[in-house]
Amino acid sequence: MTWYAIANKSDWKNFNEVKVRFPSADQVGDDRMVCNIKGNQYRLVVRFSFLYKAIQIKWFGTHAEYNKIDVSTIQPDV
Image 1 (spheres, rainbow, N blue to C red):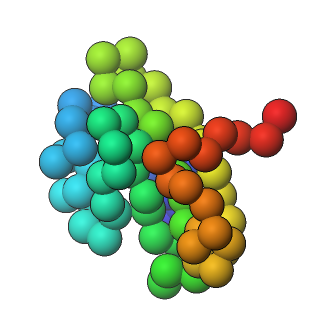
Image 2: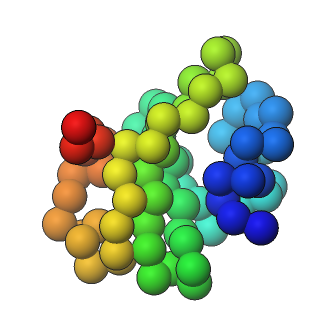
Image 3: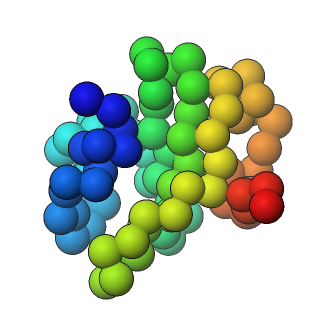
């Protein structure tokens, strides 16, 4: 099952609940989490609003690209 499909069906109330499903994910900052995708080949940076039950994708890329960004301030390209 894909990360999106799992997240879409979930009703997480805090980061601890997310970590139960994605133990390798790391919380960064107050509202962001970095998830490893496809055996850590890719990284997904998401912002959670548990109050509004919303997840915003901030960034997605390879592990090598991830090492070049500031995960706490990265914004999606629009």
